[in-house]
Amino acid sequence: MSDDARPPRGFLQSVRKEVPRALTGGPVGDDAEVAAMLRELGIALIECEQPTHQVEARLRSIAKNYTDQTVRVVVLPTALVVQVGTVAYEVETVVNPTTQLNLAGRVDAIAELAEFGAITAADAARETAAARAMRPRFGPVITVIGYTITTLGFGMVINPTWASLWGYVFLGAVVGAIVMLGRPFPTLNAVLPTLAAAVVTLLATWFVADAANDGLLRVISPPLVALLPGLALTIGAMELASAQMVSGATRLIYGVMQLMLLVFGVGLGIHLGASLVPQQPSAQMGSWSLYVAVVVIAIGLYVYLSAPKGSLAWLVLIVGVALVGQKVGGMFLSPTHSGAVGAFLVVPVAMLGARIKTSPPAIVMMLAAFWAMVPGALSFETLGEAVAGEGDVMTLGSTVAAIFSIALGTLVGWSVFATINARLRR
View 1 (cartoon, rainbow, N blue to C red):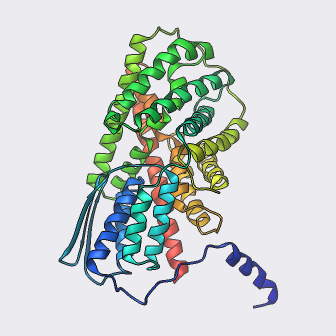
View 2 (view 1 turned 45 degrees about the vertical axis):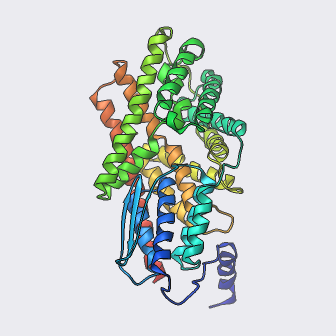
View 3 (view 1 turned 180 degrees about the horizontal axis):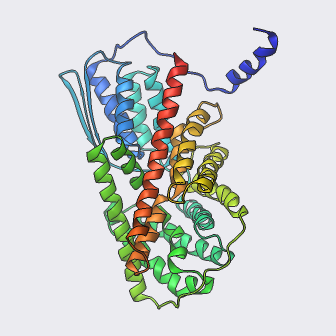
């Protein structure tokens, strides 16, 4: 090889993360310690909203570095069962589901070390338990501000009008405050969606929707984004497509129930609030609003989801790939199926980007991308229109197709990337 060919390779090596080195030349772990490690890592990954089939595959891959015994793993959205050999047996249930990105990134980093056998089983279990107890990087007030910024960004995607911007900020701050006030009281989680939807609808009918000259559903969808089960619906669709029938079905049912609670809250708010005269939508912003929204959403998610330090630029990149890819897909596919293009592009960008030294783990970027595609917002708007008598079966079917298109795009992207990556490693 000539000298001219060496600098690029040296540059790539300088920016790429170092591959962890195995501690030993083969499996040497105690079965009980291995089972405890798999339990901690597995339940932590489940709590970070990871699909069950990916958690199972990852745990099996990790186990090969630590034991020669047969490993059996059963992964459900709320529980985990691990058996190593015929003696070591562990069962764990989900305690605190979270989309806290700094926590998810730390868990993913520990799991990556375990995949290379670069950490002892006992240390991995201990570090994972500590990671699960991590607190958000920002306090309640800053977190509410982050949610308000996120709401503004989603409003610029869903309904980009100048007249509605102040409404997104106002309602986003209200919902953010409700979510933060409910965090110390987990027993209120069941009624929180209905309460928030009712309050937002009341405020929108009194102060926002009429003044903004926009339809009620278009105004209240962005502020309710934190309570919309878009992530649950998308992951459930992915699990069904991967033959995980129990996990996929239960997660989809949970997502639908959350949507129904939100719709009930909206109906209650409409009943208690003032009636609105149907109006023509306000004039839309220019096409530039999407690119501004990418930056606004990334900043909001960085704060609200407590992203790791130094990850903001990467969040801008992955949110941009998701939303711009979705827009490009709409040029040659229907709006219903355009999400598949954005989801397909997100996977290789996140997986390849995660190999660069300054980048956060792939799980951080993937979670942010799922938030950006907002399948839950589409579902909520459709159900709300049906309740108001404005929708039909076809519009509801289009929403279901949109959710599955995002899930399918993610699955295809993951399959293609994993296949190519496995070939290159040989």
